[in-house]
Amino acid sequence: MDLFENIKRVSKKTGTEYWFARELQPVLGYAQWRRFKDTIERAKTACESSGINISDHFADVGKMVTLGSGAEREIDDVAMTRYACYLTVQNGDPSKEVIAQAQTYFAVQTRRQEIADQFPELSENERRLAVRSELKTHNTALAEAAHDAGVIQPVDYAIFQNEGYKGLYGGLTAKDIHTRKKLKQSEQILNHMGSTELAANLFRATQTEEKIRKENIRGKQKANEAHNEVGGKVRKAIKDIGGTMPEDLPTPEKSIKQLEKEQKKQLSNSEVCIDNEKPMGR
Image (cartoon, rainbow, N blue to C red):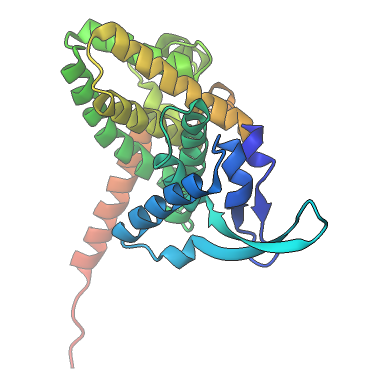
């Protein structure tokens, strides 16, 4: 999605990415500033409702423009962070195709930043454990949404899951991914992914669940198509921002199961050490 990357600005002082609303307006298909400003105001309300300081993400600024006569006039503009842009496109006109593209772009960017902010001090293995745990929860929610849509039998759900993988992995099925990772038949592919690959699958799962419920999708075929579509959009967003395709990411040496066992052993050893400590006498 080069159209959003091309107008992105980066603060020299903080390194923060931001976009000017006046430059986003035509890209998002708004002919009138007034209408786009209304969308921004709704985004500000959503920001405030989430308990987040509006001024941290929306900065009102003035900009000088040259008129046809050669004279200059100051117009109002808004400098918006990635999160502000995400809220804005979420409140945009859903009938515009470019709005749907923007929603995917800024949602992926925001999610990547959330993960980076959430785990700054964690090792790669600790991040894997955290994201895998979150993915388990959201896969359950996705299964429930799919069931409500009509994906009921286990074989139907397997097909539904394959469609999501095919979208995200450029046509590869779960079996294909399993083979590429050189896993044993009993090993689950999600337990042999790094944190970046897990994060891509987490986003695929959360956005598919939201799409099924928001659009009230009904029928196995339509649910399959929705999962494939979301997977494909996540893949395209990763490509557009210069990320590595999920099938090209390395397979970690240790599985999630191995990491969980090591974690439990460490906790057990810590408890033993605490139990063996004796109070010092006076």
